[in-house]
Length: 122
Image 1 (cartoon, rainbow, N blue to C red):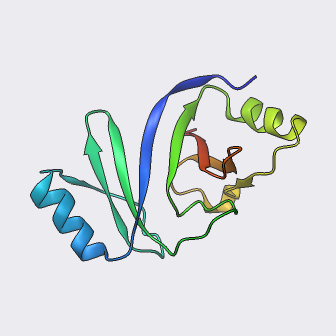
Image 2 (cartoon, rainbow, N blue to C red; image 1 turned 180 degrees about the vertical axis):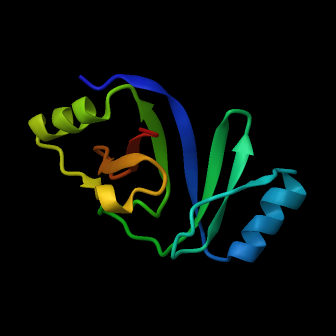
């Protein structure tokens, strides 16, 4: 069984990084957080103990899309969560261990095609 530990972040698809950053900083007053040096544009913002991730990406529906809109949930036991998804026959994408910049992560789709990320820092 997957045990959710908490909410991590919400990711929002953007098409113009400069315009989006201006909005989130000037309109909402959010402060930008450091983020890994991804090959796609965007920014991370702190909201209390959670985050909003702006991600520059094209819209792709019906496929698991780690760089599109998604919700991210912290899990207590990443290996158990991964094992549960496999046992349930749920297809997922996982960051290879040699590419982990922001902890262990995997993504899958809910029944309506929304992307869900399960993650842990360890």
